[in-house]
Image (tube, rainbow, N blue to C red):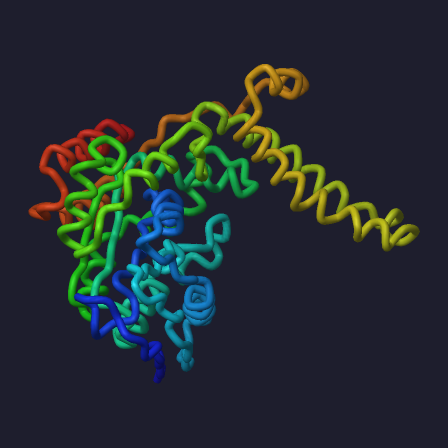
Length: 351
């Protein structure tokens, strides 16, 4: 039988959270403004963003093994006179581009809810949602940012288990409700299109102050780009990654070169199989159209065309039941926004 223990730090708390070392924990969802919010909590002087990485690593290790194991760790030390936030979408998803491990996502979600809840790190959980079709588009794009080159259809065929797991909002809410006092659900679309409404709900439901105008101005100002969308450049990055993958395979076949020049071979290998794809991503993210033109001119005609994201009937029904229906009746999600999500889903249904 699994035995899990957590040892929260015994430190004083600010008003309203006397029983907990963390004011609230943000758990995702995947590709729902997590990077933006984490940067905001890091920059705003009234907040302190705690280091979530040791907790996430421990939970992911156990989830991958699917076996009972004791987890012991202390809550990150609280900073007094600050609003302390623990944030990681890694608590509810992972293993992108590793379909052989994606069965661990649901165990990870259950483990995070139970371990952090029983450990009394906080009583409040924040979940951010967005248009489900836009979420699928963003996850596919992220696979390419991380070195992949599959089309959307190929991605969905191979990584469907991941898509279903991160869209199973019903499971996440039901699971966290077993161990937590309050589950707050807000929309990244409202954050983008009606930020005043978003922050008013955030403040009321989490009993937290809204971020300062200075922090928002800095974060939303010119040049602020955090994990920005590639838009119509996504197929270009897929092409470049396809070349990088072929180059890596070719390099790894150079047995004679490796035998003759082993140290040099090893020094070059990280550039070929890691840094080349990182370079591709930054070129596509930040280069001007003019600067990219000589690069694109050398490529073969693009056979990884920009695709419209689609869902089949089974995935459509899954999203309706497991993702959209749990949003019904939530005062934090406007009815018109939920209707918009349903229209978007209906438009993406592939005959």
